[in-house]
Length: 338
Picture (cartoon, rainbow, N blue to C red):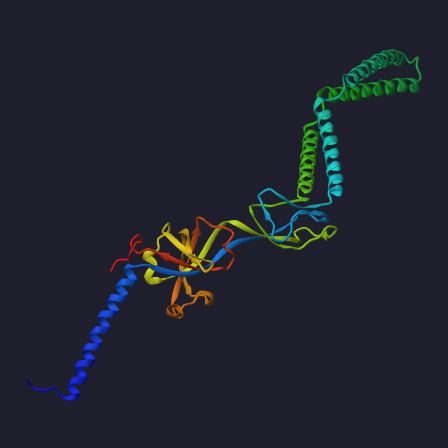
């Protein structure tokens, strides 16, 4: 058999090495695609900054940094005396305007109506007497037996009596009809405004008590009793116990393997042998560069998609920003098509 030259031998060895590398690379890629998918990220826990909606002097602080609180628990109180006085004034104003509206709706008193009717009757009688006197003076005037001045006085007295009757009848009619609709509408509007102001005063008094909005842990406390606060001033920072999730990043080639609802296991350095359980809750539709705090050698120059993993069995050991490793079993995940 013909011996190989050194140059030919080198070419054959290089070709064999290339074939072995290609086979090994294909096996590695196939095993990585069909096997376990590993993601990296950090624990993300919501925090909320709490404060009073009203200004005032801090009367008491009932929790401190590190304390656990439950939803509805009192965390601090303001001095409520000024707010109580404001509420009392608003309630009194509302009561006065309510009474005024009731008075208008009930109309005038029967005694006032009766008095007006009597006044009409009296002025009608005076008119009848004035017309009688005018008739007599009219007859005397025709015969020339009365002075012009006396006749003119009789005419004036009759006209005045007629005007007084008309005025009395108009007043009686107004009393019988009651108050006008615009007056009632104004009173109703004033009452509604007073009720609104009273409700606002009541709400301000309620806002003098700071209530925990959810279960959590007090991270920071920024007030002491006696401090004067403006409305909205930060008083506490509360770390919520729920929900707890991990923020992870997925390469584009692995998107098909991480559908929403996919069950995953989360590992932390503090509980290496005991994973937490979770599910994929959200995958961003927008690509971004891998954040530095979760960057790996393979992902340093890659675009990834942010995803949220909801932890279903979270405990206090999970802390804000804690690094986690998320593993998906390839046998149960949805594999992308070849």
